[in-house]
Image (cartoon, rainbow, N blue to C red; front, side, top):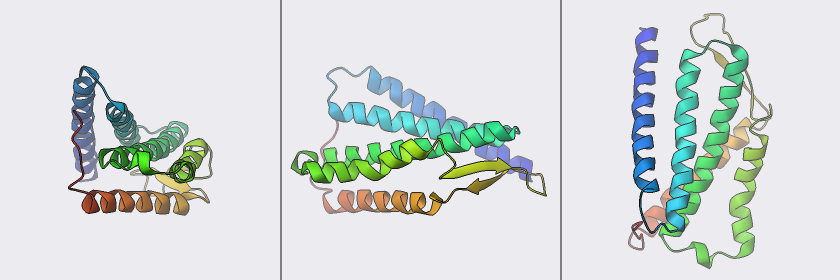
Length: 172
């Protein structure tokens, strides 16, 4: 049963990865790119890195490799969240209205986690549990803050999208 779940998860992540790759090719071939296109490219690349690391996490057994993949997943999550937040603000026309202090605040926490994702502050290491079925994870002291910051950013993204849905402008 566990093998079936791992294979299904791996298959879904592989499909998502191929879809992201196709979307990336379409955007890269689009002529007349605006800033939103480049932000979308960064968002897709970060999500691709997250999908890729999670796929490899399911099929790799080396603990050192798993630790590196775990840290890369947190790096990808930080970049994805920041890029998606900036893309959302751009699409509703708020970016130019933000003061420099607010822009600094938008970048501060995700940038901190981007810098610390390669350390043991968020993700310490992977280990083999007693059951030996799937690797376990030990998280660092900043893990809870990391999860809270992701939840807050996504909450704000959804709030902006709902509040300003009539101001949303398509990426042309």
